[in-house]
Length: 273
Image 1: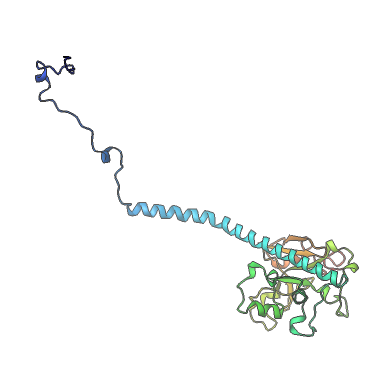
Image 2 (image 1 turned 90 degrees about the vertical axis):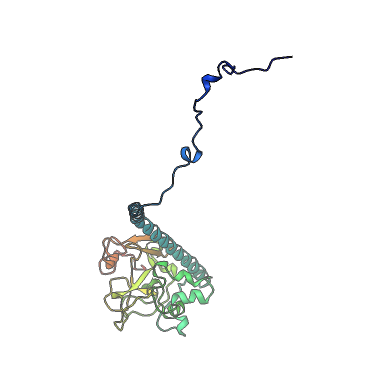
């Protein structure tokens, strides 16, 4: 028979050398691998809150800028849709722009944009409202549509002749000397931000604009509502963003911006000729 294998030093003569020796065993896992848990101190919580506040302050301008850029882009898209609707109208009416006056047959058929809506040249009235001006008026959009208080104003050159005796007129695109350099529709507001009565005006805008700075309450004016810039639809259908040269909203009529009949009587973007 084979003898069983024996470990070195396990003989009877050596057993005594192992007596009394301590055998080391590893510590429990939770001491060596799993870190100990403890509650946050008040100071640590305050540090975290401070860091979050700093990050929010740093990101806020960027988020605001992104939001404003998105609103301006939507506004530009609105004007492009207005251009498309107007082109369809011009095609049906032999090149005549939708006229507007204070003498329409009804209150709902006196403004240029109402003719685009009533004639089904646009599928949505929302294209007449800029996101920047939404929810800034107590009245409803139905009221704004009826009273011409939309976000965009057409040049009065397409409703009245600005030369004496200021007759009402219908303008044909064939009569324009330079459609690509003639203003048709712009971001609008009212002079002094006041109604004709002098009451505060916090509405969307005016459906018509003058070709120079106005001081009479309620008169429609071009307005740089997009971070000091005014989105502009030109008579050939293209849309641009025109920046005012300084923080004064009326500077949008400066010769370096939209110009005006006052500043540049012989070289302005409002004159149809």
